[in-house]
Image (cartoon, rainbow, N blue to C red):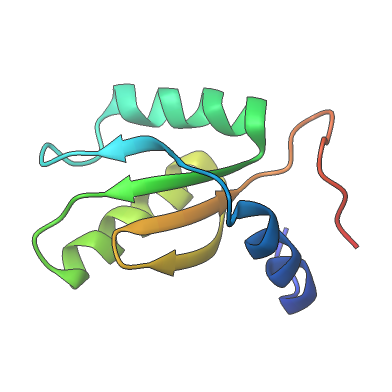
Length: 96
């Protein structure tokens, strides 16, 4: 499901007050981290992820890998923080 620009804008507003709930450390994206990300996205739908990486390219590669493995959509990235969205089976957030 590709998000429209209006939907991304709405999700960015909702994510503004959120704190990162998943932190990717120097070990990178592990199977346990992907499992936790999957569970968290199913429960919250919209989350912030902090990606600790050496350079911008490494961080972006980890964010793309997280999106691919979790089935989530990237809403926004600012520095080390990425906002991910994945619609739950019983949606809690209303998108236009």
